[in-house]
Length: 324
Image 1 (cartoon, rainbow, N blue to C red):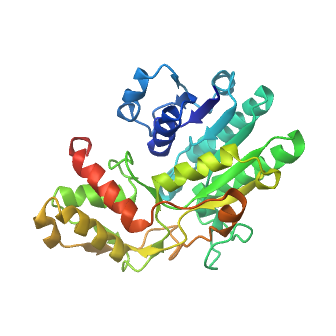
Image 2: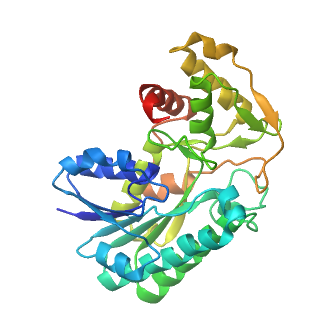
């Protein structure tokens, strides 16, 4: 039985990965300090004898060493996300995303884990205006968060070359889906807008609504993590991959889709107006990934485009209204 450590395992992406791999018969250890994760994301897993929770912080090296004991693979999801959060508090973002990441690399190296797969970010593309985004062409970071995620890639490259580790980074593009948090100042746009519309409140779009993103459903992210963890192609490791769909949707279209799917449950939502506010600091106008490298090297095949994923996500939120 293979053993996976999932850092940030009580968070949105981490809990979905945990569920997937427990269902496939893996032994899973979750490391989380509940800074952005939630107990309700993982409560069902305690019924599974293959699940273990370690409540702790990746900023503590001893905790990281404990967490990797007996582990075959690490799926490192723990981080402080959000560009605005990093602008408001760059020191904490750096401590978690850089120092915590380095702790996990050192612990994984010393434990001799087979492979280390980590959550990288599309923010690494920075001010590069080229579309679609290809892995070997990046710009300068536009936020402290983007700096931290780029530093992760640099450390990963150095550890792979210096210590012979197998490391793969997945540059996530605007991931959404079940269990994504709707609360707080840094809630992502899809869960936030869905919550507001369910509550018959008007969402506010930053700017004109023409900004576009490669919104990526959680099932595509799970697939990429599994492919990266298990690939036996030696040419596929020690690199980074865009983790996306390869299509983009602007915010006006996005709100229209969310309203369309919610209207099936509550027809009054169709008439809720949408507000517009100023552009958000640190935002780029457009983001679109090339997923050719992932398709060629990992046989990646996205299962959900934006409308499929949104319909599933909106249905999940409607059925979980008590969590909003």
